[in-house]
Image 1 (cartoon, rainbow, N blue to C red):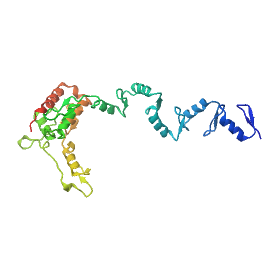
Image 2: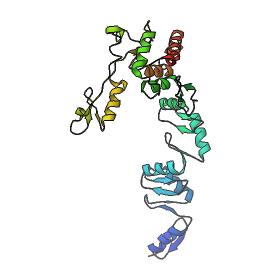
Image 3: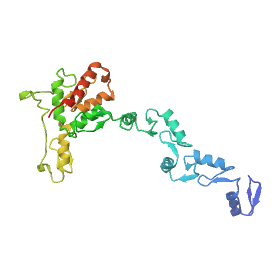
Length: 294
């Protein structure tokens, strides 16, 4: 029985001949998955792009298993904005899009996009964008840092060859900050000789910390693979009193180390850095660190 092609106004001897005609003719562009015949290739292509039944890359004319595979292809092979699910002609187009549409999470000079504004802020404050112009004040130590908080952390951690460590920094600040601008008087209980009972507390672990599986902190029960790692944990500010406090009345966040307070002030999270008295106090305290003696 003959078969008729309405679009081409032609008869064919049998269904096989008609199917062969439709497969080879430019007048027939068939989506076999949806059983739809389009009169042009452009119509079929638009169908692939618009239909949710197809994961199709219109730039490569490739089909993918699902949208996840398609998006991975976009990320690997094309200039793709993951947030907007848009593909651009080239990286310049994507760059301009990110610069205009995602300024709160996009680093223009690095052409990097971040998950959140806080991540971008940390990136911009890193050594990639900021010079290491804060120098360790002690002779024999040539290290430099991007911020005062990073320099103080270097000292608190015991990483400076000068021998200055957290306890020495805390004692120095307590003696200087007699007006308790940045220290919490409620935490600064003094023992005999005027020494702070919290500043001078040190913890250490021995082989007895092994619980049969790992080394366990007897204060917080955190587990560590080595005794060295456990003692590094005990030497950190983790189990120290929060003797530092943000001076802003509406903030009053507390910190166990001077570096953490410096970082809080530098972040301008609460606006305390605007106050002149705080600036003067921090300048004098940080500036005087280099005069410490062991």
